Amino acid sequence: MNTPGHQRRDLTREILELIDLRQTFTDIHIEQDRPVMINAPRGWLAVGDEPVLYDEIVSTLASIEPDWEALLQHGAIDRPFVLTRCRLRCNIYRTNGGRRLVISLRRLPLEPLPLDKLGLPAYVRSMIDGAKGLVLVSGPTGSGKTTTIASLLDHINRTRNSHIITIEEPIEYEIEGRSSIVSQRQVPIDTPSFPAGLREALRQRPDVIMVGEVRDPETAETALQAGESGHLVLATMHTASAIGTITRLLSYFPTEQRERYASALANCLIGVICQCLVPTQDGEKFVLASELLFNNNQQISAMLTDPAKLPYLAEFMKRKEDNMSRMLNDHLFSLVSKDRCLPRDALRVAYNRLELHEMLQTLAPH
Image 1 (cartoon, rainbow, N blue to C red):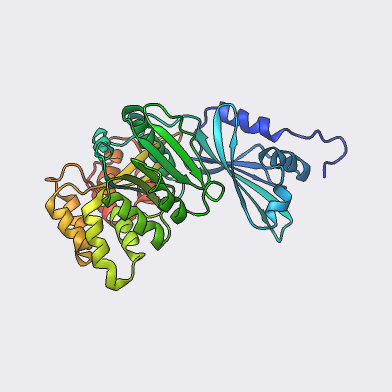
Image 2: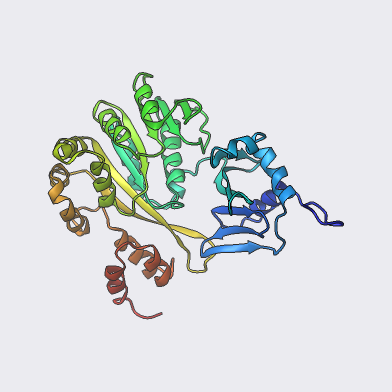
């Protein structure tokens, strides 16, 4: 409770002020009895040293979800929270045996970023120019997958006359229909689950389907079927590499059926964008680093068809004759050599650190 003479703070106003500072950060962490924290490019920073008191956090909770107390008894709550200049993805939960309340906020702009502002090569646009197939966007939590998917969908929405159906939990970017019809469906409000939403979508005459996350065999199978049957399917996965994304997708299927699904994947996969965010050299902003796999020739298709050959994909991606696919380390090396980020930050996000370390040894010391 507030101590006598303590003026209750307005957390919603503080959140707005943080956003107005134009400081680069991805998340805000508001925890009862602790100072507000933001996740800046080089890690978590406290905003002031005043702890947030119980009744201060409660008034903000009520504006996000009036029924928060009853809902928290069944577990964490996911909600969008729309402020004047941004949308926040909120996750509300309890810790310390129910004694502390926490609000975790992910910051999203109101409008998707233009495709050319993402930091991906311009030729990535060719992934969504085709009418059918599967595009996978992967990366760890907080790597900007949602932003990339939203930009790809926004580009389709502005340049193509199509019906776009999204299945999300929760809806993050609200995409206003422009040249396309856009139907955004939220799990579990508009549809009970990702697999159900995907099955239903196939009967709703879509041209483009976006699946918030592939995390079970049924979603994986239906996404492959949709990609093979004349739809453009965009989906995200929590994996650290392009090959890891394909391996994870195939791992959802029983071993004896894996070859059949690998063949389906080789037929419909357009490509994989695997990404992470690296602090810029001054630590003030983020730069996007990406690994790209384009299924654009017979050799890649042949390797996808045979799961035993997947490990050889990396060698092929390193060759310069395929100038569209690239390994994450090649991009990280390029960013360091152009002074866009520091070697230590590049090494921190690399999944093959030893190789990157050896590559960086070839650079002249700064």
